[in-house]
Image (cartoon, rainbow, N blue to C red):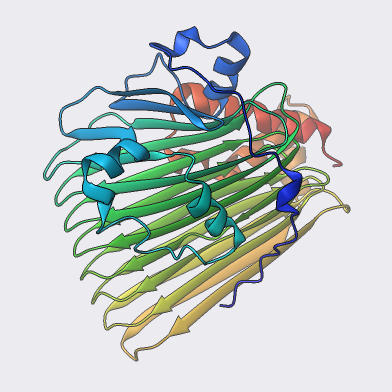
Amino acid sequence: MKEEFRVDEHLDDFRADAPVHDEIKNIAELPAGDRERLLRAGIDDEEKAAGTFVHADHNTVYCNANLKGVELMPISYALFKYDGLKDYCWKIIEKEKDPFTELAAKRSEGGYFIRTEKGAKVDYPVQACMYIETDALAQDVHNIVIAEEGSELNIISGCASGPNVRSGLHVGVSEMYVKKGATLSFTMVHDWAEEMSVRPRTVVVVEEGGRYISNYICLKPAKDLQMYPTVYLNGEDSVATFNTVLMAGPGSKMDTGSRVYLRGRGSRAEIVSRTVSTGGDIYARGHLIGEEAGVKAHLECNGLLLSNQGKIHAIPELEARHKDLEMSHEAAVGKINQEETEYLMARGLSETEAQSLIIKGFLSLDILGLPESLRKDVERTIEESTAAGAM
């Protein structure tokens, strides 16, 4: 599938300079407003974590790894420690892929490096947050994640902007490597200001028996989001799973999707997206490419359109390059079922409460395994959006 993402930002309109932020010894040292924003992006200093990383504007302000078997450090230090990470840095994403990757490669303003040691089973998630505190700033980061052979790693990555930020550009380049028999679960939560432009660029390589799970949540009305992570299932019996939950408010545009190359014999992939528009435009893309025998894959795009001002465009694609495989897709866009609403109202709920409950069920939040504090905030956001939407 040819990518048709627009590159119409005037990059020079965003400022490159930002105040220097000093390191802190504890997240509790941050102002209350900043801590609240981090919490809404999934970063909770009261939750047990294998490590926590916070990057504000262009500076890493907090980095702490708590469990044996996990390495967590700023990417700049990892490049120094591991002689440039020659086998991993800019190996699966081209610097010249687009103006945004070029920007990230040129400026090298930071990011994180996360690695689990061979065979390490990490019970608690690693928390990582990219935070913009300066209005109209262009933040460009480069992250590298390595799940070594037989290890298990769970990352909650939150991206957010400060209470005084209205606009800006976030470019996040991520290269991820899932080695033989390893499992990497990556949950990304976006909580941006209304005029933000957001450009994640992610590529993942999965080896034999490896498993990559991606959960993506964006329920706040960023102005313009473009993301299209790509996974290469190179190993036999490797697996990729994508769960995407989006809510687009009036004036926002979300151009999202996932692509999986199934190159290993017996590899499997599932892409599931749940989208709700209360007035914004959503493009839900998905592309499965089967290249080897025994491949099985499924693509599912479902949307709820709650306003005549919005638009949902589902674009599922299947591409078979071998005769011995199974791939399927389904896509559906509609409205809230009036009979379901009336059923719930007959049992004492208001119309708004009934519709909010239906939307929660539609978005399938149970599959994401969110921390309780984050789940409550997600549910509150759905309720607020339902009340404000044009029903």
